[in-house]
Every structure is written in structure tokens, then in C-alpha cells.
Image (cartoon, rainbow, N blue to C red):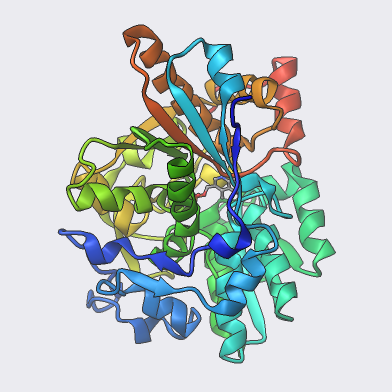
Length: 438
Ligand SMILES: *Cc1c(COP(=O)(O)O)cnc(C)c1O
């Protein structure tokens, strides 16, 4: 029988995260204080983030950063995650390519987001923080953080993008199971929310509006920190456990990927699977590996955005981030991949794209669901709408191999499952879904 799943024991959970900033020749540009235009230092971020996260954010020297033993203990609830050879999908496509996926959907909350929620909540607890707040789109980050907050006895308040709050009621319920306080954004509970609603009473919300509200709450509440689920360097750092495990598992399979693919919202799961492999490209050891970020055609910051200093949120509360962006007031269409509806790309990934070390591709909504459905039928896992974009990009590459007869090794990250996103699949199956906003 052919080996399908490559499993690592708990003892193989990485002991360190990989900090790609240390290896980059062209370092990501610093974030700037919007008032003074001075580069942001770690101390500037202490009012907002856990201190350790702020330090990690600006760390451009330490290649490896220790994972606290207490965090590894919690990772062991669901790590190491399996690497799977997608024989079923290969057969369905009739491709000579070898397709592998890293299955990050197998944790209790169903997405990779827990990999950063746990350490962020841990660092808050360590420094005596009692309350945490955040934004969430489709709800995966909010769900992961609600659970991580519960693990460490922190109170958690989540601003959920209004359209997702309405479209995905079960993720709201999941957050509420973990005792999080969930508010649809924009709301009347913050000044930012009030301003946005005054200008447009029908505003459907975006990650940008929800971030503004959460940041405002954190800044105005004692002993409260703001935790972000993507975009920032320290979040991408935490996600490197994905690629570090995958590297060992690919070795178990006796292969090394020619192409590494992940869907792209703010860049955390892409960074997580890509950077550990990218380090061998940066060192010159594996020059030809390609890295592809798959974004939605309706929110195409990498393929159609501009590199600029832009705010991370709608109201302009955050530092200015050097990144590919569609503009912080960009209103993404209401696609089902809520986690990909973000206007910007994060500083590291943006620099890597500028330097030609990674590529990006944009995927239309209907194509993403066609790919996700084919994958589900072939592999028995219903993928998250976000993950469908990675699958579509992987299928595109596998189909090219079919034309050329090349036996390329393709690795993609399955960032989450779609079992709470079945309204989206319903629409796809009934033919009422459209390619909105493209
Ligand atoms: C949040 C999310 C994404 C997008 O976020 P990234 O930071 O770009 O990884 C992708 N897939 C799933 C399942 C998500 O929950």
C-alpha cells in the first residue's frame, strides 16, 4: 500500500520558530509612526501588544526564537499535524505531479489560526494582562483566540465583521461557547464604529473597521491588549511551525517541493508554510523552489495592489506598514472567503514579492469553489473557502504538469476546513453564487 499520511510524534513539535527577517538580504522596511514618520520601535508597540510579541515584531537578527515549553504543551493538543499525499486528487486530475498538503484543519477550531492565538494569549498572561480584544472576519481567528484566551483565563472581546457575523452565525456561536463577547463591526460601541456608521449606516464591515474598533477598545481599557491574527511579523513567525514540520515530513516522503502554495489573506498561513522552505532558497541551496500566494480576484493586493506605506485599519489608528495594499479604505466584495478580505499584505511578504522571491496569483470565487469541491470529492475533506484558493492554484500547477509531463512536487497548505461554511457551498451547489467584485 502506498503511504498517504506522514505523521510526526509530539516530540517533534518544533522547539523554535523560524524568523526569516534574520536571513533576508533586503530587510522589510520599518513600520512608521503616522504622526512623526519615525520608525516604530518595540517599546512604541507595548501599549497595544504583549511585550514579547512587540519584540518579536521588530527582531531582524535572531534566526531562531524559542517556543516556550508551556506553548509547546498546548500545541500538543493538536500538533504535529499530518502531511498528506493527495493521491485521490492526483488521480482525479490525471496529473503526473505529486501533490501534498499540510492539514492544518485538524485542530479543535479548524484552522491554522490557533498556532498564533496560543502564544499570543500566553505572552499576555505572562505579563499579567487580564483582557484581550481582537477583530475577526469569517470568525476563525476569533474562534481560535476565544479558545486560547479560555486556556489562559483571559477575558476576550471580539469585533466580528458585520457581514460575516450575519453570514456565519455558527462561528459566532463557537466564540460564545468559549465565553467571548462578540460584537458586529462597525458598531456603536466605539468612536471609530460610530464615525463609520454615521458616514454610511449600511456599512457591511471589513477587517479594517473591526481592527479600528478593537484597537480603540484596547487603548481605552486598562490591562487590555490587542491581538492580531495575521499580517504582522510576529504572527507569521508563530505560523512557521507549519513549514518546519512539513519540511521533516517531506523528507519522510523522500521528496522536496518544487512549488509551495498557500492562500493569502494577510499572509500568516502562507508565511507559515513557505518561510522554512524559503530559507533554503535564501541560502542558495534550493534556488528553484517556487512560492505562490493565492489571493481572491476580488481582493488582489499582491497581483494588483501598490507597494506603499498604508494603515492596517480603516480609521488609521495603526502604525503605517510598508506593504502591497489596495488602500486602507478599500471595500472588498462580500465573498465567502472572509479571511481573505483584507486590503494589505504585511511587510515581510511584500518585501519578498518586491525582490522576486515569491509569486502571487489571483483566483476567482467560482473557480475556488470548483477546486474545493473536486478536492472534497477526492480527499474526503471539505476545505475552508479560503483554502479553496490554495487548492485552485495547486490544481492549476498540476494541470500544467499534465501538459508538459513533468513530475513536479507540489505542496500546499490546507489552512482550514469548511464545515462551518456550508451556506457558501449551498450557494455554489444551487448555482446562486457569483464572481462578485472581480
Ligand atoms: C484567516 C484564514 C486565512 C487567511 O489568513 P492568512 O493570515 O493569510 O493565513 C486562510 N485560511 C483560513 C482557514 C483562515 O482562517
